Image: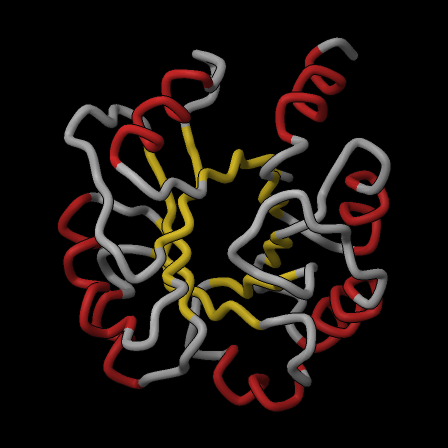
Length: 186
């Protein structure tokens, strides 16, 4: 089953609460990018995943597990993180400019693969890098049972092709409302 997941990139707790309040009531799961600052609200009533875009994810990962994150994406492979796999799904996030072969030895030890599909992560509204299609195909061949998430540049014009080549989860930021509206009208 494919998932379309709204992405939130808050810089303050107020932005987080506002973004959550603007999601359609039928959305029960969201993706949040976590930068070095700690932003959270106890008012959250939805399931969520976090993308830890931090220098030392092993230091804050336990906090997000405790807060109830269902999935956690990290950019730095670390054997120490495996101990959390019984509490949350753990995935490796790979930037579009990094060779997948460099990370392949680690993919057997995570629950999913989180592919960045934009050059400048941490921003919304960036265009999808066309290299993502070949990257998805390669991972589908090598790791057919591993869910693949694609994050960045996903919109109403490219989501179908991403799913067709093998993406399982689409993390959608600035184009979420447009995509969601087009899908719920079908």
